[in-house]
Image (cartoon, rainbow, N blue to C red; front, side, top):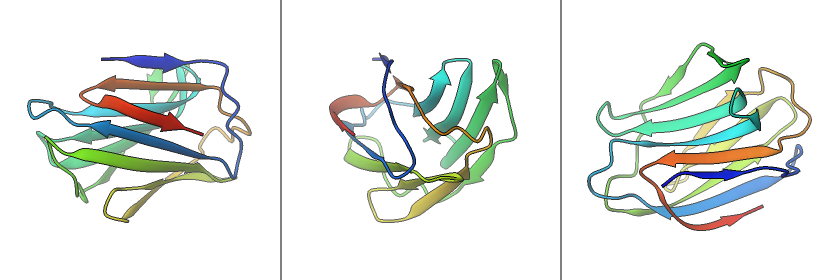
Length: 128
């Protein structure tokens, strides 16, 4: 299922906690933070078919340069928890095993008001 949340107020220092179950048949999912679906500061996209986590940003509906992290430490059929922290110049995503993925705040956003979750992640809880 897909979830979109508008009118959030995430600022540097805030941590978003996302907990969900990954279906056994999923190809992947994405957690997106930004201003809207066309302008994303962080696109966090684990891809099980490629065994990689892709992070990217989007500006005026155009994707930018992707960052690939090969530390895919969780798997289909598992329940996972991600901590996404907005820092002043980057995002820090803490994976279930404690590994951290960093991605720059390329747009220099001071506030995030849009979050969406797409694909194979069944939401259990979402906290800011």
